[in-house]
Length: 564
Image (cartoon, rainbow, N blue to C red; front, side, top):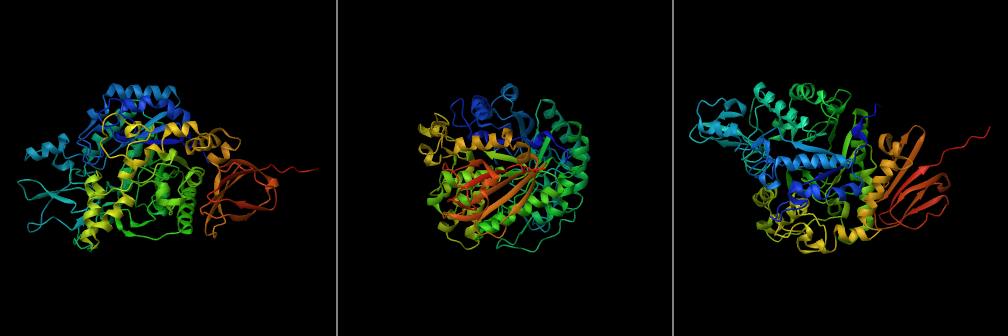
């Protein structure tokens, strides 16, 4: 395997609206990130990925861009971003931004021109189709619910949106559109970015027949992902993007590429793949039938989670490199999702989960608040939600026959707002995030889960994350934990997840107990030294090891001495 610089990174994802508010208007901002660089450096991370900060009406919190070259005033000015990139660099931290090129905002000048000018040259920048008998062109359902088609005022035409009504999809079939986007990407790379996380990129190619789908809900619609995600022909677009832009820079590209079958992973992340790495969402969606239907709950067990993670790891290992995560801005909090019983959500389960994902093969991503064990909330009414997707799922659940109480339960479990609540810096009002009322209601447990308390406690989740990062980045088995192959072990065990990492004769064995009971494992401890353990007690040296509840144990195999 050829080593690449980005394989060694530890990436920290920032949701800027909720990270830190430097000017006390209730909204996090770029200066707020700059002010917290010392904290990020002390954590040990090497790169930040910042969710969209471009000019936007914020219908989908910045994933609806109205100007690719301007920043949204609530986040600050371009000079603030330049300063952040520079100061982060001085602390050994690279910066990655989100790249949103499947769609724009309906307030983008291109779309506005199309609305106002019957002969607009931007008509072919978006996907427009005539209606059928006063109805939309077909029955596809958007990811956020409702038809993918919205009527263009005063015409018989409809425009296409895979996501929200205010996010019209760009027409990637038009080379002019692609060239405009490439020019923009180069502008940002020239600014000194280390690369991009590429949003919803598998949606850029649609099945050009635009035929109806078999309905799969009471709304008579079928999900657009069947015909508008990872379609035949997308390879040409992705190859061109890679050739004309990414390949000319030593940048990292992280594809959000849902819907890609494993047999195509080589095209995406192989030797000449479109991206450096991609996220695999299969294990993140194990609790629901699909990421877009939260009311279809799935009962899962540890074995299911293990199988999904190990299948993913082995397929990625065959193809190239992966991006490992437990949480992001579209997911709920991991301790609330993967640890089913509330009474077991504690230091041990949070650190066990953290270590389990962190030492997989691939580049680890930590989402803000994960390192202090932030949890899901419980909201009392739909009015408390901001997330466009949660609101759609609430009403869709009721359309599908669930009660309002059940619908609220589903979205409390899965809402994207769970991860978007303001960050807990201390136990002051609003968790030290701001002195003003935040844009989104806090999670009320900020007085017991916050950075300030955990800084003081050597045995906190935060300090365990620091040890974990240090173990991977500069510990005695660092190379093995970064570049080593992965091999699942104890694959049939119902509650222990375990794997080996192997590199140049070195072997690291990792054990994770996903249960609240002691578990026995056969291993000769005389052959191993402990690299990391979330329990303080020494491990007795004998043939059988007892893993305590939610224990994480990372062991380095001792070098074998051969006697001549």
